[in-house]
Image (tube, helix red, strand yellow):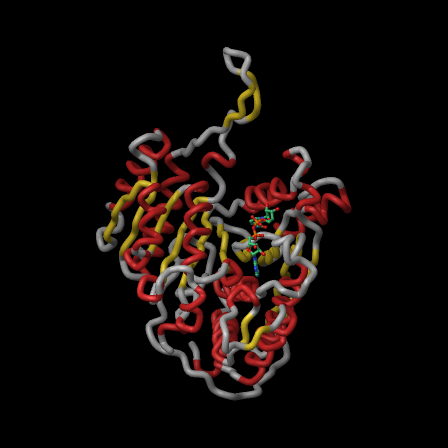
Length: 409
Ligand SMILES: NC(=O)c1ccc[n+]([C@@H]2O[C@H](COP(=O)([O-])OP(=O)(O)OC[C@H]3O[C@@H](n4cnc5c(N)ncnc54)[C@H](O)[C@@H]3O)[C@@H](O)[C@H]2O)c1
């Protein structure tokens, strides 16, 4: 059970300094005990909720209830400010990230996002796509570090597409650079080449300071976990990767206790499915991190289980499940809300430093899984198949009856 407690395997985010908001393993098992303590709210936080599109509103609604219950027993009160974003904002205001939404997000203590996107807006011009709004939000909040844990829970090992012996015990963290690289690099656009052929082009570009700051976060992360960091690049081909590797090696001198290795991205993609247990912390650029963290997510069984935190040097963090808006199941009460609920736990832990409330949520999720409840994406015979709302109700039930608050520090 102790291993399964390491759901997020992270250290609380106490302040916005890069040296203190970093992940670590729990050093001791947590105990579940019953109590009914409630207190009047002593602390109040402003949370911007961005439900977005598709299954976004379904999972955010569940996560909001979970946040409220977990917080209330810790004397915390939330003031939620729900704002339009993505396709919902396009329909309402004509842009994917209205100025009011960005301002509200910047002024809040933390931001919880559901998901954006959908078939309806797929043919829009680029600046009118929901995904553009998400990039603008990350850029606007200056959240350059994206932390994506991928942990195979003992309860869900059979949901992995990999053989049990390969998947069992996988517990890794992808640290992805989020505001640089080819997704933002200029020049970019469309044009014509010297033969009159139509072309599309983008630029993979990194400045040394962008690599240094993400490398430090990755080294600190690895230090708090098993002390192993693998930097993934394509330094055999790309100049931006050559600089990446040079800077990561330079920063490694500040962390002599962390074992640094390097891997080309094509090999890393193979190794993740061949022997994922060889990895502890991976640091990589924006586009490689995007792809590798989705690949890592499938090892754990479902994209519906995985949370993420995006943090900057100061200001509110952005917390979101790694999945998209899942238009194929939207509005059908089939979405797994656990990735968003666990993102809410990361919000408490990293965004607000409310560790006890975060751990209550993590334990409630584990308890719900232990009681056999599963949404379709993680279902296997012998479990109890439930929808998004019922899964949320069951997590609330676990929160209500299993109260670890008095037993965790
Ligand atoms: N951060 C984001 O908001 C984000 C991330 C990725 C994709 N998108 C957008 O989402 C839309 C759909 O993209 P996609 O289909 O490539 O990816 P997706 O993550 O939405 O869905 C991929 C598959 O996983 C399933 N799935 C996803 N989340 C699930 C959950 N919580 N529970 C159960 N099943 C779940 C879906 O049903 C689908 O079969 C696109 O418009 C894309 O641009 C948004």
